[in-house]
Image (cartoon, rainbow, N blue to C red):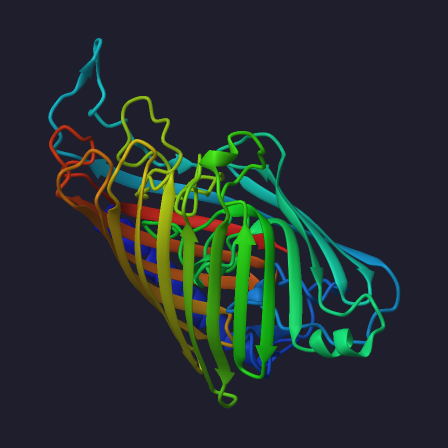
Length: 451
């Protein structure tokens, strides 16, 4: 992406800001801040769909900066109900890439020669969700991908049953469920806080940027989570299959994954919110452990630093390849003061593949700074992200670093237009690897509809 194009976007963003500022006093509705712990996202008074299943995070702008959803208010069940949610994203990408790898011939094809990239539209992605209140405090959710980079066809991401009230009218149980939530099914693991801010296929409303992190901690596994909350404090423990698919064969090669989270989330006053969370994840044995490679929908930067075949749907990311065993920890501070948001990530991990005898290490750091203004209709942001890992078969650590600058406009609480300028470099890869001397940079514009 040329400097001229980047400047043109800046002029357009400034023009949009000016236009909105001139009409701010004519707005038909205002946006109020949610009180209490768990969210500080804007709550538009109009122009959104009313939802009956309050235990599920809103898919539109109301879901911003929401981590674990607060417990729904007890005693409000008025009969079974169902909500339908959807999210759609379309991108225009203009990225350039290059590398300095030595030729690696396979037959007559140089596997280290990068695919030719041009400007154009990427595959549109879409999600479809069904959420239902079944009984007092009991919710079921079904999440689906209708179109994704990894699968053009419709397929199920996952689903779960969540219990926030005792199904038995027994005083001790009812008292326990005042503070407790139980979640069971095949769902997105609550490891770390970064997964609450990432783009999930067609759902790009929560992410102020276009891309996710270089090492993307996200997967879906079968099992359960138990939450205990008291005021601003949340404690969670999870036990899952440790794999993205259910299986009963080869039990000696499989084991349970155990993970947990401790979070303090305090709305100090109407202007200031503070959150700090720490998460840990451990799986001792697995045939296909995917905590760092579970994004079946694929990355957001299409075909960057891939060979002439262009078949790497996780392009732009680094996957550590801890397929057999893994231990990981993620710490996330979050501060929101008026329109300013700061989100941090510090992550360490170690693991190995089935053919390895020794663990390899991972370290990742990231910082997001976002400023929202004009009643949260516009925002600008910057991100720095770096990751260092020892990949399987490598004798030294390799790394990647990324700088990203983004701007966005909530045309309505259901419609978001955003753009990002990204610059990423790969470091210390051997010359036999196509990522040696690899880099990509340029611009991506993304339109999102979610409700």
